[in-house]
Length: 267
Image (cartoon, rainbow, N blue to C red; front, side, top):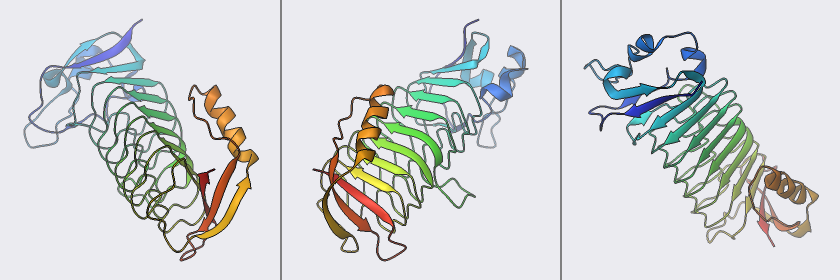
């Protein structure tokens, strides 16, 4: 059996809702039934067969080819299986997913990994604002799993995050970790204004010191953290060559709220 592949025929004239194209929804459907699924988002009807050319027959492995920023909700609600995207994706990538694996060899739109509870998402390019943030209708952002962004992240990455790990290998926009409840965010490069705004608990690990530190964080000085060494070991086992060491300057906050979070700036 080969991966079930969806190749975009041409640039769509409307945004596409691709949330039905996940393994648990497709496993009992024949090719003609899949092609008949509605994916349009306007009054003009649009089906899978209108927009995509289908190949393969294994719905546990799904592949999208040639997608662009109008292809929304890829992997939304994913409960099992793997999805590989060879192209860009639109909004709500992997939003609310429970398990499984998503890999995108391009850029992602807004709210990638919004309120996800498990599984892993890897975006090789940039992710737009509120990655790992709050899905519409939810009260919390990311609740578990791993979200790895190879490029830059837009504003408010990890907004109101509750659990899990976010890794940003490029720059991060303003208010990273905004209103974060718990969890871990690792930022490898520059960070915009207001990092950790409203941070209640959890850890923000920064390789570079932000130019704009909020005054509501208390400086605890440079300390040793076995946690950082353990995290580095885990990252290496997961195939990510990120050096953390064991020393970091610890800032406690945000003291304007609960104030039990921490910002660790590697020393």
